[in-house]
Amino acid sequence: MFENLTERLSGIFENLRRRGRLSEADVDAAMREVRLALLEADVHYGVVKQFTNRVKERAVGHDISRALNPAQQVIKIVNEELIQTLGPPSSLQLKGERPYVIVLVGLQGSGKTTAAAKLAKRLRAMGERTMLVAADPYRPAAVTQLQTLAEQIGVPVFHDADLTPPKLAEKAYQTARKGGVSVVILDTAGRSQMDQDLMDELRAIEKKVPVTETILVVDAMIGQEALNVAQGFRQALPLSGLFLTKIDGDARGGAAISIREVTGIPIKFLGVGESIDAIEEYNPDRLASRILGMGDLLGLIEKAESAFDQQEAEKQAEKLMRGEFTLEDFAKQLKQMRKMGPLAQVMEMLPGHMGQVARQVDPREAEDQLKQIEAVINSMTVEERRSPKILNASRRRRIARGSGLEVQVVNQVMKRFRETQRLISTLQKSGGKGLGRLMG
Image 1 (cartoon, one colour):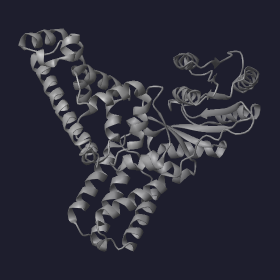
Image 2 (tube, helix red, strand yellow):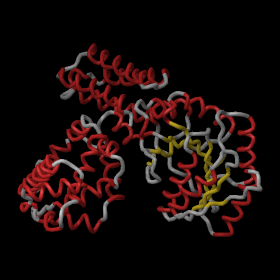
Image 3 (tube, helix red, strand yellow):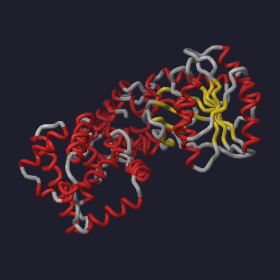
Image 4 (cartoon, one colour):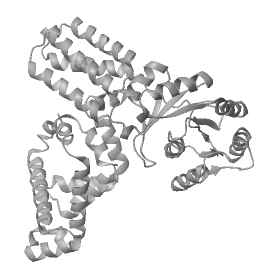
């Protein structure tokens, strides 16, 4: 997510830290570099100009040259102004009479159907009885796609091929009321571009049902074009929020940074991957932290909480505090970690020194290494996993054959395991002291 921009900004801030005391000229030079980095990231020119002017005004006004840690002060100001530019968080306003109706609109290819399934699963996990409505009769396989996704999450789909989208929405709403459904999510039709027929159809839908939220789904990877799309839909419909998709594939970040300030439409959700679980409620503080290379510790904790089994985690913690750690434990932790999502996303959330180190690692290579470790451990007997000391040369050759890898790879896995054991032993003896240095 925003790797190119994060790398540029991290480099600029690192140069500031090396300078010690900063003059106004140093701040000016840094702001010129920040400005260039943002423009290259496809951030709207007007947004860049206002942002850098605000940072510069505050930095000079705080008399950075006399600050105890001037570079950190500049970074703090940049972070605060970036949060302001990104705009305040805005949650779903599910109030009034049920069922609540959420209409998802957007162009073709923006990811509306997947966004609908992600939102349905999220609301279902919050205790809502959700129903999806396949209101796109034009795109081939649109209904089938929604039904397939809905089946994965256990949510019903309403569809009637004989009805027009407005009448379908009306019938779906009445069915939901009778069936005790609390939230109805309409996956509407898109077009390759905005046209009058599309807007007329969407307005007709909103006349047939009491809409609670109209959310525009936008592909973050189209850069500043996302602003034009948002402006066009806003002129035709009463948009209540934005769902930015494909954020995980956006190396620049222009749309995410610009869209709220330019259009005034609040961002509500981010699509951060292809899986149905890959959805985040928008939080500008955490997004700014990730853009600036500071990680997202809260987001990481949330991912861990959703992926890790609480009882198993407590057992593992007790074993670690006793200094016990076997290859079975190693395998369990790897399995739980993989549940947290793509390794690249997890790595970019790491804060402090750990984050800096992680960003120097190729995520694909790291994924391959994890697969190799799992293959090696899975090729061992239970006794070997619990007592790695018995792994002699003969056993290692057998494990290598079983995993389809070289003996050298098996030796490397064992070396990493012993290093992890030593680290755990050190932390156990020190009562966890030193962990803060890794995080900060």
